[in-house]
Length: 367
Image 1 (tube, rainbow, N blue to C red):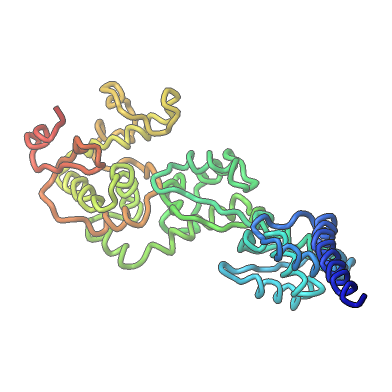
Image 2: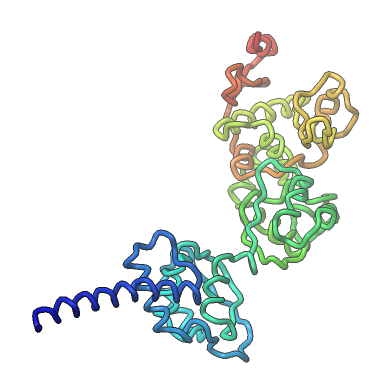
């Protein structure tokens, strides 16, 4: 009889284990949602059991009367560290239960660095979901090298910022004297430094202007200013020339060469004849849906505008785009060349052929 009882007890134990193996994950899924699909069957059972054990630690807020506070998650910060920081900040009841929920749900793999507004009135589950997206308080805003102010404005509606294109353009065209390099300028075109900015979602248009212009100011070192002076240029003139170099160059390494061509032309009073200045003067081209019409026609080259350097000698009256640091340095420290001409190579590489004489320039043309 005893020999018969032992196998029956073993079978019952296995059945109970299997039942628990099935019912515990099912109950956890009902309360906490489905587990991460990449967990093994054993891991699902393990973390499901933990969540059921922790119970109210995850679903009940620590303090239902608490207000919001800022909480920062650093790039590369571990899940253990985040859970401990939340506990130390008095935002969750228990760090280990929070970590277990993150792993169970798969949210541990998608936490975003950034600054959040969290509250102890939120449950641990709510906080776990909240830290998946930092866009609640911050926005990543990018200004690309070579953009004109209208292109920056056009990017605003999808940026997450509450600034309209019209507000940006109005502020950009408002003269200001709080930055020396803009004292006599009609707009800030050319000085919106190309970069990626982490901004408050609620930043005002004036605060955005200050952020962009301050970034340019930080790049304007005494060395760079000295380089401009050595070329006989004020900061405003140098940025204007750099804005043309930015639009002409496809390969950054050619920027000092292109700058040398334009400086050589300026030094002998020769017209710059730069296509980007005509493109800027023409404005938005509805046919191609771009601010930079390409190719230009012979009629386009005759478009009467002070920005058209095919008609008017010298620099245009203002920058035509927002140049990056490479373009600014190319103007400050250009290559020393005898070149007065350049044109795109015929191989589609983005590189140019440079020439000292017009005859050589013609020979560099594509057949």
